[in-house]
Length: 401
Image (cartoon, rainbow, N blue to C red; front, side, top):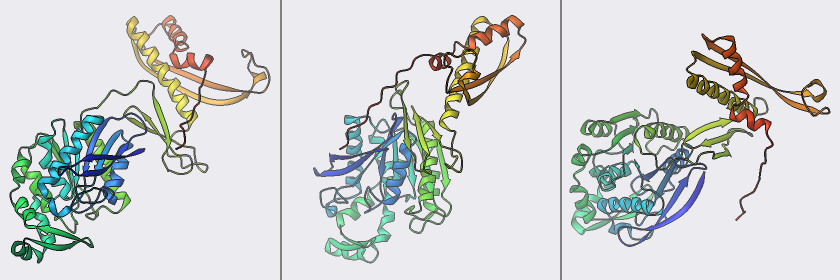
């Protein structure tokens, strides 16, 4: 994963601080993440989910709304409408610098905001809410006894999550004017509602109201046992995994991955675990226990898999072109090291050599001549030829900043 600090101009002309999380490999699509009320872009849920999504080829922009976190401006001058405007401007920034988001993700009040902003971002195909209220007016219960003081004096200091914020009357008036139910009904994107039945701040009935108001396609996922802020890593990872799977069904692929480009990076699963990104495909490699955690095939396993897959594909293409009745191909491979002197056909006569034993099982009503020809064709598969040819491997390194 790569992470970039980003800055763009918000709805009130102030600079907003953002962070763009990028996959190590090709980018499948872009997403925009809106955090909870008075939180920041670096709140645990936002950062963990955003980073986890990059493992699936999804780039995620998260930012601090005006007056919060690292963003400039005065929070007291903001309201729900200005937050929506900030979201749209964040999407404009992505569109101008890379590619517009096709996915909007909102946590808590951020979920209300992404639904409200979706119709102003034409590229959006999927919207996901996490622990979101059905209506922005839900935040008024956080203000509590200060509501009357705000109405009477025009503003009041309110302590939220241990921090003091100035809330003004215009904020209350703006919240009251939001047509959220209509926005949900008119949403022109697939909707995923994720909510914990034990959410301590936003009751599960809010998820029901959102889900019932929306048209299909819509889905609901219960986050059993999770708290509102998703402070447990397992809960955040679960949300990211479900989101990534769901997004691939609805979101638009941003770019075609560069053919022949593979990125391998350590994934933190034990001493040798690796994440392999091939386009929008994600694989895992590891060493067997007790050296590694055995979380995936070894590098030599993957090498054999490449040769086996190429062999099978080559035979299939040849048989189909010849219109031969080839029913099924399976390839069994094994890698070992042998003494060079034990290889009668090898030029090298000293030391050790790598040997790959390949056994091909061919099913179908084929003549002996056809079967023999397929065995000959197996040696012409591109990976087989690459392994037998002289290979130049050029190694460079990124400059250290």
